[in-house]
Length: 113
Figure 1: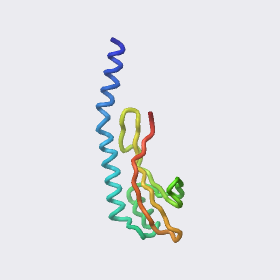
Figure 2: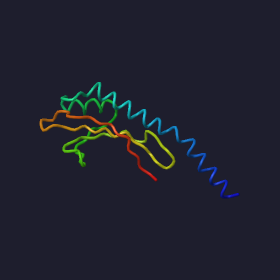
Figure 3: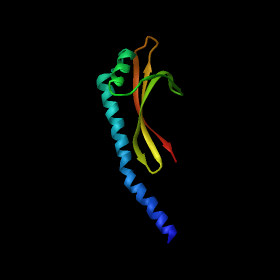
Figure 4: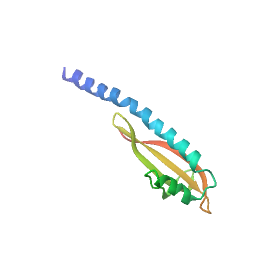
């Protein structure tokens, strides 16, 4: 019976937190639309920083990766959970050499088991 009780607890936790992934996806969709509307390609990076600062996020340099040459990033943390995973919305702004927005991406990133 202890095994059944443990399994029931684990399943209950997963069921109660599963809809939280939907919230994470909603935040990614929200930021995708907000960035599209307020931070167009070609805008100065200072405008992107001011826009996000007005919403409580800091757009910071420098992010690197396989398909990223020069980018800034901001993160809205803990926008969803699933089991032992915690999700954040990562906003990536690729910047041109003259400090203008080249591309914007919003990703759901998770940390945990």
